[in-house]
Length: 375
Image (cartoon, rainbow, N blue to C red; front, top):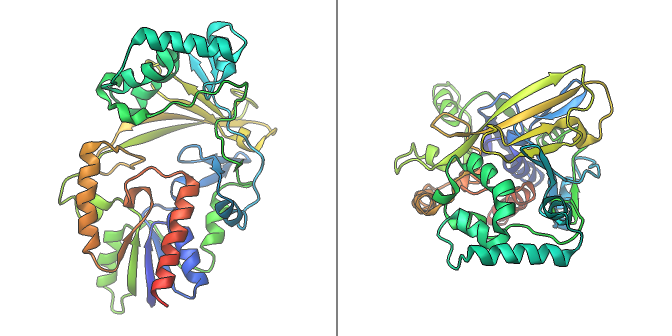
């Protein structure tokens, strides 16, 4: 077969791009090293519950363009992300808001909360933060930092807050209202029936081959009597892996998921997302999947999420965008610019953390650029 595009990766970026190119009359072949489509937003029904197999994903956006686009492929419910944080035996609302401050300090008014935070900020007297700890103290003071920032952040990054750069938390969301809605975006929800259905519709009538890496595909294809041909490659995997790490490895954080199926429990924690902010608790959060779709059926499924050090061969989840890695990525971008008919997209191809709406936006923009280029 002759294809205009080989799309490497069937996550949101690759699927949106392939869909748009097919609409424009271009042919695509999609491959994925996993045995399932959807990348990290893959969901699977288990015990009648849509389980987010690679971590919780809550769709939110302020872009009408993106919201209208994604609603072509799914109906969204009205789920609002309102996580709970547990520190020792204390329970707090997230993000930091008046419910949080009332629980911390037994206060009721925004003025009291602002006064308490300012008092603690002044006590720390941090004028030029040199690390993440000092940055957090300069923003929210000692109480919020110690109970709700420090342990969670150290688990997430695998390093002491004093060894992390200050720019990681340029700001911390502090709201002086009794509002537990984590996001401020206008549109928010979970697709009814899970995210996999969106990807299936995006890739409808597009050939997909699963369980094969890009290198294996190239090797197998070259050995065939009549190999597939393609004009352009969209690569959504790790950009350093594409170049065989010739300039060195970019750094990532990975995750380990521990699922538990509880047939005799209908409601394990009463909320979809509960964060555990103590450093001593090895996981960062527990997800109870049925609450994303307001499930009331028998049984439940929970997932404990453990941040882990990434090593070659592991699944990379979070780019570590510090000075060293951003400089190295810049060098890989220079190699990519010389690569000819190869595009790099998504969080791994572009080495940045994307929310889902930004993934869709970037994929649409890249597809449109390709369409315009071919006119």
